Length: 388
Image (tube, rainbow, N blue to C red; front, side, top):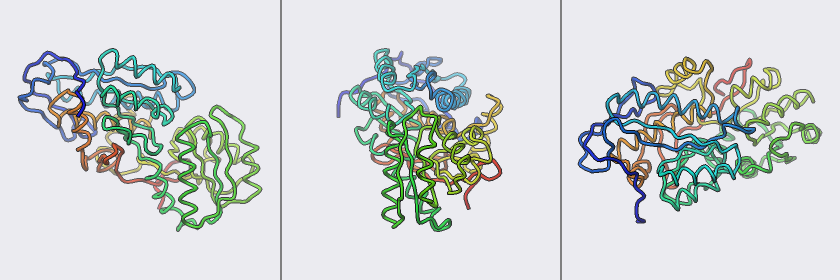
């Protein structure tokens, strides 16, 4: 094993209590009198880097919800150990770009940070995970979901369900009930999550003998999708799969409604905010394959929603939930590692099995990707509810 990169602390034996559930009163994990010399002195802070888009086109749809999810989890974790070591977040703005994410990762590593949460997109993650691996820094992306990105090394992890997990299960759950036989797809050709998501959809549809009558593309930042949607409408598909980052989803739904398209839309990680932005009429009947939903009865989920709403005055959505869960999962790993050494935390993350989370029982697979139950939601009367 490579030489470990170690966070430097003043060494004393301490008691650290980290919350591993997902509300302040949930299950708490304790580290009692560690014999290792790698624990922080009481009242010291474990610095955790955070890389997300605070500015740029992803700031409102992704950056702010992710930051708020981290902040709520941070409050709960630190309040659970009033006299012990606390987490401190060092936040860097990546502006929603690959260059910004690379710069932020390198800056945090140069500052001595050995745990980094982020980035948001798969396109960014593909570029920065190798930097974390090379420097033996633990990196956890709460939201990136393109295939194979965590397989590059043992220091990198992801909390979102990947496209090769979520897409087959979603189609398996919906196709028999909806009976769709003709499908169209539309995706952002500039974004890795979107290109991989579209490829995964078409692969699964092909294996099921479902005809893909059209595949249309656009570029992130576009606002006019009428040409692509008009072509799709002419082919009269039963279902239309959308693979996109958040900013473009409402516009696609709204313009499809204006064109009179009646096919069912399936939009990966459609959120309540997307539904509101598209309008209830345009979003009605749209479906999404996700790992979390506000209507899901999983451990601590309703307490999380209530706490989030109280703190920020708005209900959380999928990105908030994944960030919130990510920091709690990290806290569980630090508690189990009884160490702030990144190699020990890496091993503790890899060994997490069936941890109770707001997703349900959570584990990491051998590649460092998440394992938990996928969910299918549908918009009814302007609200995302369970698809039955």
